[in-house]
Image (tube, rainbow, N blue to C red; front, side, top):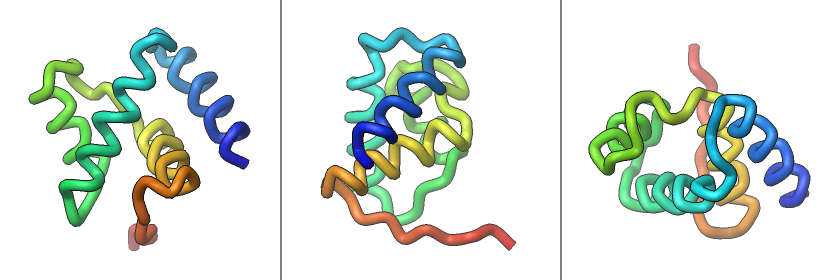
Length: 85
């Protein structure tokens, strides 16, 4: 399953204009944010990424979810998914 997630993530981010070579760094940064934060949202992650110099609104909801799914599938983080009401 991990390979499918990576392929889908790569495809999605390239379509959004991201260079594949910097995607590893983005995944690492999102992982660090997730590890050091008890609650994750698209707004929080994008604000922290902007603070770190990645630019404004680097991720969309799908990109964030794919990265979190990859990190969880890799055993690096544990995500408690919550549906919005």
